[in-house]
Image 1: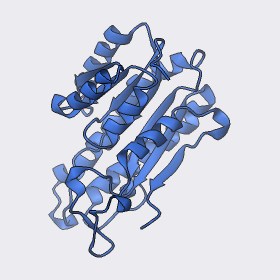
Image 2: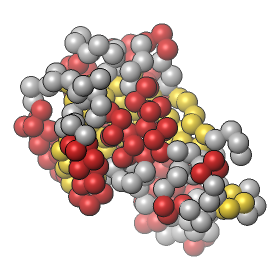
Image 3: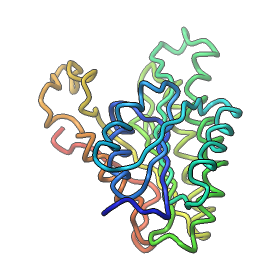
Image 4: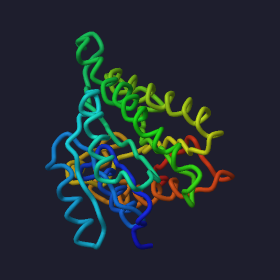
Length: 250
């Protein structure tokens, strides 16, 4: 499908993994706005999209900073004010802290909430009004899609900071799904339950030492992008407010 001239999409949290795959997939349907703190994270994705005939812009954004989020959405309004928002994807992971609980500082603990709790609050406060404006005109219900992790379901040892943030993110998403679904906005939480095939996970181990060099043991990031994109193109009778993506070979 060629990019629509009437709508655009936003992907917050773009790097070499899930964020990139989601952005590449949505760019087949709409112009895409990419948000990340470091421009080096989204620049390769912009290049890939534009070289394929798509449209994309990147905005350096710290989602945990209210003024940074406000500035980002003001820039979005300038760039795409004549278009409507079709989909907003929140893929911000935040700081990953693995420490024994009794060695965890308050700052360490709060780090898990900064991106997953506070950051999502700030992002959703800006995105949802735009999505509501799109309800009457969008061919598919406008969507707010959030990516979670295994920690969204269960807290592992020494992961109290990360897990508490992911639990908060999932709970907020569930609440928004029930509030905004009746208004025509699809709010969905996708739990990515597994290791994604990116370079830094090549040497990771699972199941008591099983090396993850084989791609069959990992979640393929392009498949994740397709699943998230499909979630954003779902009619109300097929909505899923909470679903899981995992490798059933493990």
